[in-house]
Image (cartoon, rainbow, N blue to C red):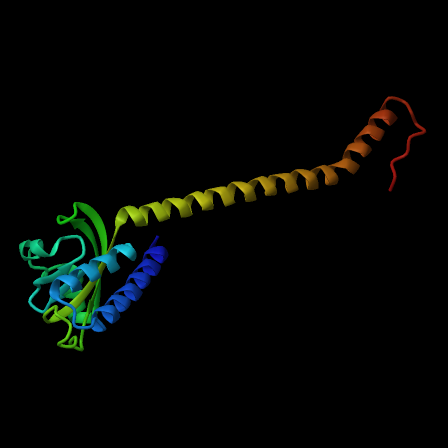
Length: 193
């Protein structure tokens, strides 16, 4: 599970880099057009995208309409944001109150400010998240494939073992049959050497 989770975090890191690139290269759109564009990007990438300023104020949240963004609580003390402050990136798995589901979060600190033509304020953190239901579904599929592969390998091993044991036991059975005939009085029988 740890290997899979680390691969997933690497994928989230790549998506955070892509989101930063897209935001950095937005061309002078209105605030509403920018918001809608980023929502469409996040939905097409099947991720939750959040842009946060240095004080923890949420500037953009792909799962909320723009008019509700002011109601989102401050994110400065979130574990993934605190890790991003100290290490540049951070992760966490927890329940999202905003969308009422368990999520895997990846946050990245932005060191170079976005150009002034990007109408989003001072973005300091890009955060990408995916529902744990997605992670759990993938893990279930992997487990199912491992079980199927194990059953196939076990069946193959049993079949090969059975065939080899029969082949090895055949001369012993023949010797036992000849020995039984000799014991019954048929002294003409010989055990081949």
